[in-house]
Length: 400
Ligand SMILES: Nc1ncnc2c1ncn2[C@@H]1O[C@H](COP(=O)(O)OP(=O)(O)O)[C@@H](O)[C@H]1O
Ligand SMILES: CC(=O)OP(=O)(O)O
Ligand SMILES: [Mg+2]
Image (cartoon, rainbow, N blue to C red; front, side, top):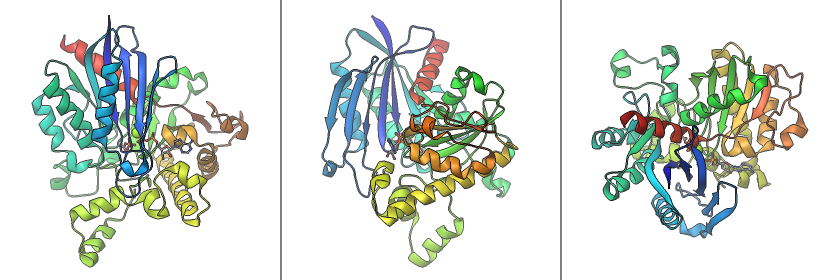
């Protein structure tokens, strides 16, 4: 009977799950799946569930009608039902969770306790699209299986080694000491990419690598010798690039304007900047990049133009932080699957020395730049779940 680690990764528009055999030196995939297209508010797309075994054979599938507006709780329940009927002869030994915000307190993965849950709950206002969905299954499992070790793995932890200047806002120290600083997110994804770099011998000599995690949530991270030195997200995951429904960078003066002139309160502004902006807000059509790329509507085109333009500008900012770059890596839903967005971003980064190889890009990489490109460009599938499984196993073993 194999020892199984279950990993839950609740993103803003999806819940991904993977089960790993904890025995081998590297946790080994047993089955995986996801529910995609979850309702974030605004217009909804059809939610879908699929699950596959380690060999890629389909072992579960379901599609909901768009007006079902499937939420995170129903999606988790569906995954739970599916896993109960596919447990086979495995013994569940731990559950690892992606938790988006770890604040100043959590600089590495931790075993979940009631005190940890309470501390993470206090960070909910700093990650309203994620933290409640990360904590809900933790609470459910504490009730149902109090004996089962659960481990929280943080999106913020990987960035905590950034230089102090990269983490600070130019605010009075009394405010900074409250924890108002730049945390950066998607850290489990960047940590996984950093761990995968040795598999690409051509990147052996690379010092500075810019990684573009482009999904429903999008951010960029500058890696120097495999460590995070700068990122586009800040105190919260609403900062930086425009995303599916989040606005990204916004002059704080806009918030004052909304309060003074439109009499919007904190909750109304929260809804606007987290759920009604970004690709959805600008296009008025969808938060889903596939839908926008398929559309002939000028507003859809403009939303995509703005997305690419902002990525181009932020790449410049990160390249300045690292004094130039050796490579550019694309990952996550859009980064891994949209050759067109990669092409447009590479064009915006031509000044940096990126020269795209169109055929390699159309084929999905891994290398998508020409042999003579000064800065090489790559597609690398992220694997936040494997990173979580590694952390979960290490925490459980350390406690044994
Ligand atoms: N073939 C594709 N072309 C363009 N965009 C894609 C493609 N496949 C997935 N995407 C986009 O990826 C995004 C979801 O990314 P993902 O990383 O899975 O999200 P999450 O942030 O919820 O984890 C959506 O905007 C979706 O449209
Ligand atoms: C932090 C974040 O934006 O996560 P996701 O991309 O999964 O929404
Ligand atoms: Mg994600």
